[in-house]
Length: 193
Image 1 (cartoon, rainbow, N blue to C red):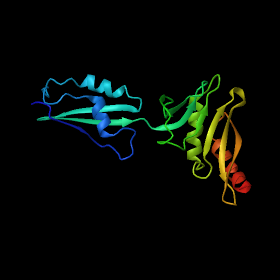
Image 2 (image 1 turned 90 degrees about the vertical axis):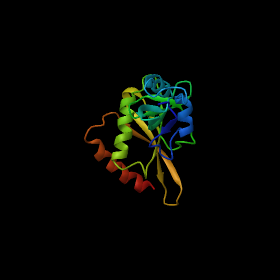
Image 3 (image 1 turned 135 degrees about the horizontal axis):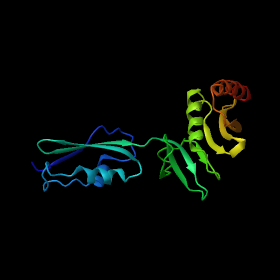
Image 4 (image 1 turned 180 degrees about the vertical axis):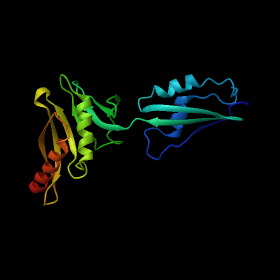
C-alpha cells in the first residue's frame, strides 16, 4: 500500500495557489511510504504555514491515494501599516499576506493609525455591502480617526460618465439606524452624480 497518487480536490479556477504549488508545499512522499504509516500532521502543518491557507483536510484513500482539500483565506480589505506596507485582511481581522494588486485590485484600504479598530472597520465593510452600496459607491480607503470615528473615501459615478470621490464621515456607531443612514447617503451621492 505505497502512496502513489496525491491529488488536490475541489480547487476553483481562481485561487491564490495552483494545484502544483499546493503539492510542492505538501511534499507528500510517494513510492516510498506506506499509506498506513504516513503521518498527516506534518503535511498539514507545512500547508498551514502558507499565509493564504486557512484550513486543510487530508484524506487517505485506499489503496494508494492521499487527497488534499485546501480552504483559502478570503481577503476583505487591505490594511496599510505605519511603515506603509500593505497587507490583506480577512473576515476574522487577520493580516495574512503582503498585497498583490494583480489578484484583488478593488479591495478597500484600511489606514492604520495609533489604534486601528479592525473589528469596527470589518463591520463597516459588511454593512456597506449589506446596504447595497458596494457596486455603485465603492470604498477605496477607510480611516479610523479614534474618537472622531471612521471616514471612508467613496467613489461615485458622474452624469458625464466619469468617476469622482469624496470623503464620507461615517462615525463609529454602526447600530440598526446605520443602514437607514446609508440609504440617505445613496440618495445624496446619486444627486451629486
